[in-house]
Image 1: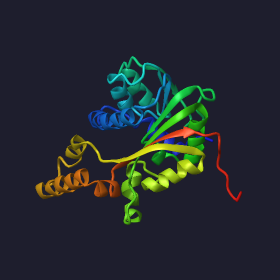
Image 2: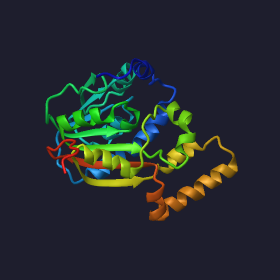
Image 3: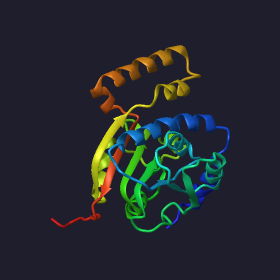
Length: 246
C-alpha cells in the first residue's frame, strides 16, 4: 500500500521557502506540546513520522528534547528542507511510502506523529505501523470538526485535511486499535499563531478573535469545547482491532 500518486505529487513539491516562517512559528507550539505531555517518560530513541519540512524537529532540537531522533517523510522537498536545517539531534532521515516504516519492531522508545493523521488516506494502516516500531506514541491533530464541517469541504481539502476529527472520535480511533491512552490535552494555538492568521483581517474581525480566544483560554469549559488541537500520549498494549467478539 502506498500513498495515492496524486497526493504524492502534491507533497513532493509542498515544502519551499515561501511558507517557512509560518511553519517554523507553528512548529514551536507543536514542539512545546510534545515536550509537555512526554515530561514523565524515560526515552532515549525517538522516531518522527511525517516530519514535513522539519519545523517541529527544529524546535525539538533547539530545546534539547532528545539527542537521537530519526525521521521518515514522504516528500522529497520536505527531506531537503530538514537537511538544510543542520539539526544535530537528527541521526537519519528516510523517504518512505506513507505507510511502511523502514525500521524494526520496537526499535524506538517513542514515536511522534504531529499533524499527519488528518492527511492520511488509510489512518489505521499507518497507526498500526507506528505501534509496531515504538513503545510509546504521541499524536497531535487539528480539531476541524464542527456542525458546519460538511459545508467547508473545499476549505479543508485545500489544506490537505481529508480526515476530520473531534477529540473524542480521535481517541476512539486510537483505543479501537489497541492503544492505551495515558494522557491527552485539548489546546489552543499560541497567541503568535492567531496573530499571524488574522494579520490581514479587518479590525473588527481581529477584535472578535481576541475576545473569543481570551474567553476560551481562561474558561476551561470553553477551551475544551472548542480547542484548536488535541494531543494524545499512548502506549502499546499488544492488543489489536477486535470486533464481534462479545
